[in-house]
Length: 133
Image 1: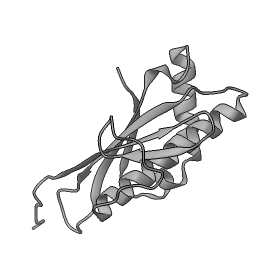
Image 2: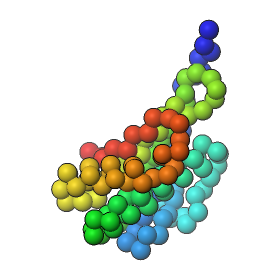
Image 3: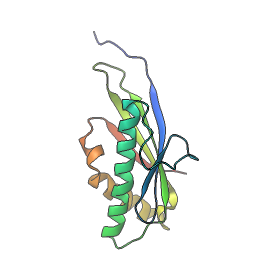
Image 4: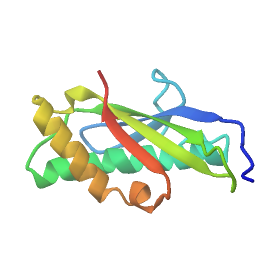
């Protein structure tokens, strides 16, 4: 018999990256000013790692395509798995749709960044990287 664990969400955390590739962190959309993540828990540490890896991977994907991205901000959340062992079951990183002018270019960069991101490729959980509405 499997033991069920109470569903729990973590985050959101926010990561922004500017044209000079400076990454900044915050725990609300309007407080993304710190150059080091304001980590209150191991869950936040992992979320900040994932979000910053996706942000940097997006920059790398754009540079490989000879594109320059405007500054942007990501949001990351996670849900705890509902069975043992205690772990995360899923993550979601939301990327603004305006990272590129055309929607097909946005989606192409997202897929390419997901392949580049070592943090998301290392985690043994569902990871969705989506464009915001």
